[in-house]
Amino acid sequence: MPERPAQDPWLFSSMSQHLQQVTEALVAASSHVAAGALILQATLGVVPARSAALLVDGDGGLEIGTLHGDEARLRPLWEEDSLDGLSPALQALGTGTPLFFEQGLPGGAAGAGAALPVVLEGQSLGVIVLAFGEPHAFAPDERACLRILAGQCALALGRIRLAQQLEQQVQERTHALHLANIKLQAASAGLEAKVRERTAELEAILSQLAYQARHDALTGLPTRWFFEEELVRSIALARTQGRSLLVMFVDLDGFKLVNDTLGHAVGDALLREVARRLGQAAPRHATVARMSGDEFTILIEERLTQAEVVETAHRVRTALEQPYLLGNVTAHITASIGVSLYPDDGSDADTLLRHADTAMYQAKHGGKNDIRFFTQEMNASEQHRSRLAVDIRGALAGGELSVQYQPQFDATGRRVVAFEALLRWDHPRLGRVSPEQFVPLLEDTGLIVPVGEWTLGEVCRQNAAWRAAGLRPVRVAVNVSMKQFARHDFLWMVQMALKQHGLEGDALELELTERLAVEDLDGTRQIIHELRAMGVTIVMDDFGTGHSALSSLLRLPLDLLKVDRTLLHELGAAPGARHVIGAVVSMAQALGIRVIAEGVESPAELITVSGMAFERLQGFLLGGPVGGEAAAQYLLP
Picture 1 (cartoon, rainbow, N blue to C red):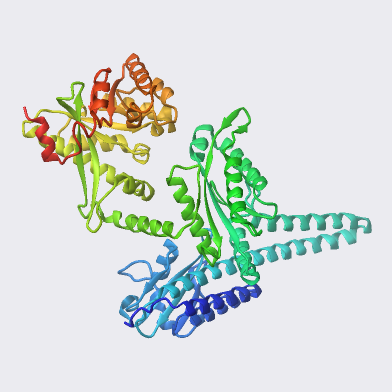
Picture 2 (cartoon, rainbow, N blue to C red):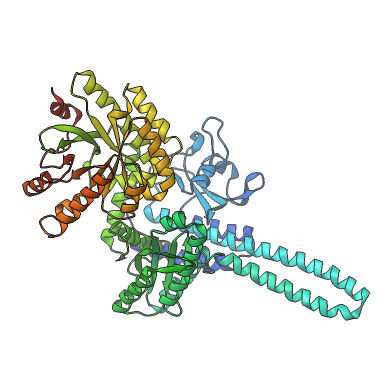
């Protein structure tokens, strides 16, 4: 296979000009065939493919919309294989991800090929397939341009489809109007006024249909499709005029909690108010759009200084963090905001949006309610995170995950009475990866459910092994994620893990976070009752980090409470910290809840907590996390 070419700035510029010409030509395309011909012509101008076709999504599946070259050579890319299942074209369409074949076509044919999904706002419109006569290494620029062409094709086909639908509606309405007019003329000339009235209604309907196609029904803001079209137009204009523009990506913090706890009607009202505030906070001629759910974007084409850009971003954040008076309830949310600039942070719409999204992600994971401007370091960080997200999918099957056990001592700090199980990931190339890095990835990818189930099983296996060896029996605490707890089979999973290893419920503790507890208090309380009936101990972890801590204590049947380590670490710095901790301990005792001091890391902290009514102490000063064999040393008779 030819060696993959290095990125050529001149070639990239040439491709960019080529793509701009295609964009301008597509605007004039009035049919799927015309658009397909332009796209295929443009595609063959980017890569040296021999054959290409645009497959459109028809009633009977994928159909050839436009063809260039040898249809037989392209067939392996869209025909289903009875052995392998879905064709590459259907795979690409199903996943929304392009497929590239550099050393041979599916089915064993020589050459190379590609399948590029044409998708608009989650709707499958078709697939572009390419076939080469010989192996071909797709350069990064080629892949990028092919993706952009597929996106341009999606916009063009979507626009044409909408135009055809509107035209058909116009024709149907016009035909109906014509029949009505004949009847009216036959009945009475005086009915002409009614005809004019119906015509006006028809025009209003058509105008409304056109508006709805480009605006969000809930907020009235432009849709993602409209925004991306506007961004492409604005970039082309800014490039011609030699000026800059700004993209702001706004993601609401805490909206899901408001929506779930106060109801969808309140959530909808909040989104409408957010849209109104964004419109007021943004510059007069800015484009504000709702991308999806609780995500919004702002396009600013005005010439702004750096100070004005910062001021605008802060104005948006301040507007959104003010209380929301929604009927008889008051809601509070904040926003994480990412900003990217043209041309510094990208020369095309997709890159600018992606970089603004990356900056927003950094703001959200840096503590939320923050503003971040895109930097190349963020790009590297996002790429690192993306690689970890890919690698972690094979971590469980590859035996890279393990469990360590941190001891929990009695109030004297001398005798181990329990362990907390802590998940560890030893990456084959990067070494040990911090839980702060990989646990959010498990949550985002949904892998937290199978990994959590494996962790629970591994903890039960180890505990059973300790007991079989004649060691002193202790409980082991396992952290539970929100996604695990919300599953309908969670109780069954706990029962099976205990039963498989011959353990009773009193061998296990489950640690829940405050946030998990308040998401659905009634549902959480019912599940906790059933777990306690099995003998399982329930612990609230990290108490004092926010949410509805006091109400959680009063309404949930808890056994143990962990005082958050941050409170202990304030003992030396904040004079009132000791009184706060003492109040928490006293309150818990009054409710019959035992308390654990977590994060004891200095002799001074140990002396302080030893004088308080803690049942257990945990921290690196007393003992750090160790493997199962080393943990067994704490349990010797």
